[in-house]
Amino acid sequence: MSNAQAKCCLSRQSVANAPEYGTVAVMPELPEVETVCQGLRSLLPLPLRIIDVSVRNHHLRQPIPADLAQRCRGHLLQRIERRAKYLLWTGSHGCLLNHLGMTGSWRVVAPNESLAIHDHVELTCEDGLRLAYRDPRRFGLLTWHPSGTTIARLEHLGPEPLGSDFTPTYLWRACRQRSAPIKTVIMDQRVVVGVGNIYAAEALFTAGIRPQVPSKRLGRERIRRLCESIRDTLSNAIRAGGSTIRDFRQAGGSQGYFQHTFAVYGRAGDACRVCGSSIRQDILGGRSSAWCPRCQRW
DNA sequence: CGAACGACCTGCAGGC
DNA sequence: TGCCTGCAGGTCGTTC
Image 1 (cartoon, rainbow, N blue to C red):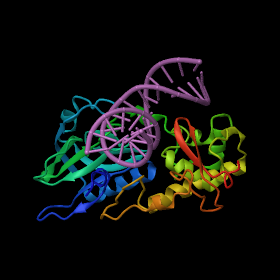
Image 2 (image 1 turned 135 degrees about the horizontal axis):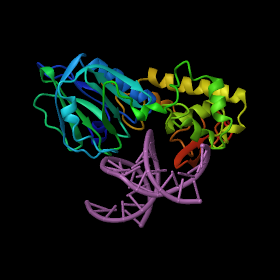
Image 3 (image 1 turned 30 degrees about the vertical axis):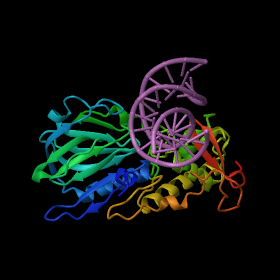
């Protein structure tokens, strides 16, 4: 396995006399985090008690709390859920909040396996089950929230794009007073969660809308189409098992395949699959943004 | 208040 | 071959 493959895979290797071992990693937008969440649920026998926590490197995007080990010890992990791009490990003592950043991953570590350089946190659970959090770029986040406390980071998030609150009318209201480019607006987690650079570009292509258009210039019908495109793009990606730039693997080792159907993302200079025009690329809000000049006229 | 932009970090690709 | 540069991504803080 190449380094790149080792970096981003969710796979199970059969190990004699042992449970299944595997890694869960992605370029995380909502579909990938959802896939990781489902992968963890299938790998871990919940409820599961955490016996010990070892923090080998505190320096993530925000320092891992010094008392994390103390807080988590004895925690009976009951649920693993997703909200936006966050994973919530909830149980008896509170909630371990985790964002995978760009390169975060979870791995079930085999009994005699040593941790690697970027394995920053290790959870030891009952029955000797070991989990490692790996994050080479350290853009991830790991914080602890005792039961009964609110998680400020989640307070101002917008609706889930696949939930019933994300309606054309809601999106239209959110867009109508903002002059920022529509792509920037749909990537704003206060407006709607989970839409990152890849799926924003893809959804705008499907809706026939240029990423640079000020969001308030879009009428209700185009916003309705965009709302539908966001839902379709994300749910297709979840069905496909999540996708990443290079090397996402889903449980069982098969490759996530949604990346093969990108219409514009990462295809600057290539021919549009619909009209044959050359895909163009700009920088918007500091992010590369690809679009088809013919299919996306608004 | 909203919009734009830089910082954070590492691995990788491409150029020389 | 080896060095250097630029780019990729999500979030947050700062500046305008």
